[in-house]
Image (cartoon, rainbow, N blue to C red; front, side, top):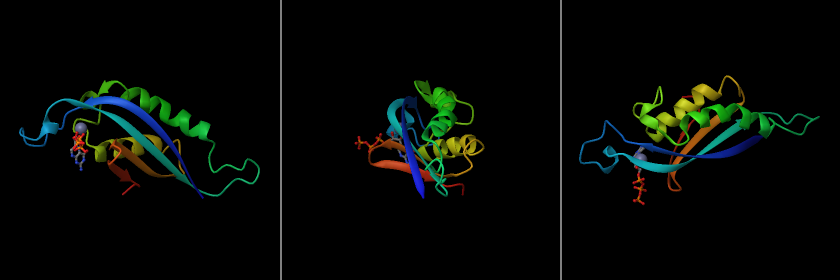
Length: 118
Ligand SMILES: Nc1nc2c(c(=O)[nH]1)N=C([C@H](O)[C@H](O)COP(=O)(O)OP(=O)(O)OP(=O)(O)O)CN2
Ligand SMILES: [Zn+2]
């Protein structure tokens, strides 16, 4: 069984490694959407794979580090592509959420990166 919980945050970023002519080289903002997917057996007592409240508790402190921040200034996100943000969230969520199976980071409703640990 898979469960997914979605979160949003607002942040600014620029992509330092694209050419200066690339519009994402300039500082700009996104309304990011993050989806955390967890996979496992349904506990027969609770009916949960993992309590959504536990997912929220694990992601909350990470969201605090991202929301209304300049992502380039967040330690570990000097080049804050959607791919790198997904990996950053994975590395910091997995210890608290061992059943985490995928992290999706949407920059827009049409563009996202998905990381599953490899
Ligand atoms: N593989 C990736 N490619 C790009 C990333 C990324 O993280 N991974 N990021 C960007 C920029 O952040 C860019 O801001 C995203 O594009 P944006 O202009 O916001 O979105 P659209 O191009 O879809 O916007 P429209 O104005 O609607 O065309 C670029 N590439
Ligand atoms: Zn961008």
